[in-house]
Length: 262
Length: 261
Image (cartoon, rainbow over all chains, first blue to last red; front, side, top):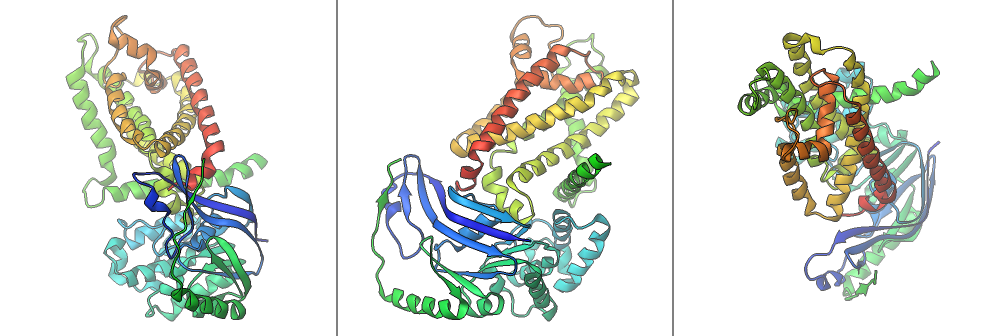
């Protein structure tokens, strides 16, 4: 059984203060509030988030840039820590934040696949077979033997999508790149992606694409300035989000600043 | 049987990490004819030069001095990489690790295995040369290899986390560690010995530089130096302090440092 239990969690990023920080507190059209501490600038990326996910849940995250989607995904993956509240995760988390994350650009497709097999605890005797499978699926041919820094974005998509076969997480945490894949990817790879998502007990997917969300998730969490604004069915929440986006374009961002005496 | 079942997944994980280290080290030398053999070869070439140039006493045979320097130099490589290779672990590699099923502790463990892999590769020619040049050196003292490795592993882990912490909070220390490690190479008995010296800077450095005690351990294990319990006691004391400090630092900071960009 897999579950994610998030109770009143707040997450902040900290950046070292450098030079004149007064310009840092200027509020833009996107992004969370920046607070000025004694030694650090604090970006309050998530504030009082509560979310409960259990087996079978398929949840999408929406929100403008800097609303906290990626932070929430990284929190669930253990790449970030909550500085307030409590998070309980049961089950193995498989994060896919960005295209090519977790790979080494200087290594070939084959070497990256071998390393991925080892990291993903594929039995040693099966590694050679998996590597050949990935090569076939990706359709990269001779490029599979070249460093991935020589790949085009489409080639990299092909490799990453093919590597998904090796991902064995109960909780799948994916960022927006899933819908940015090369449309020429073969049906086999698309099928793999579907298998991966279907096999996961919990899916947490951040995306701006209504098509992707409607295809893969049942409920949506709309994040705004680090807080949950609305949570509900895709068909109910997404139109509301779109309407808000339209209205927002006409509203000028206010210059809001805050100072935190610590 | 129950114990074996418990430790088997752990051992399997360690073997996998060594395999990963091997593949990564191999890729670092891709395009060369000798490939990964450059790792021990470069150590041997550098050690030969040090031994030839810095042999300070005609009473010490060159072969003995060469083995003394080689044992010190390969372990110095392990000590130095524990420090200079740990300055940007969390900030630079955590996301890569998370994508590959490693936690923050797992990431430090993986980097430790990388260091051990290089150390073991360098250790192989040392053992081989001892067998050829001074086979009598290898004796009961080899039983000290296990405690030597345990002490080295836990101290390396503690040091790595502390170094990373210090550079996160005080970025200037990154260069300080690099320069300091270079300085320590000369200030530690890697290629010089103070065996015949009772006063002066070398004797001072032998007494008050902790690296001198650590460098003595592999030499004692491989019979190059005589067993000295005081050295082991000093090393144990320093290691306990480093590990305790590393553990406390990890316990209190592992949340905050992950969010520090």
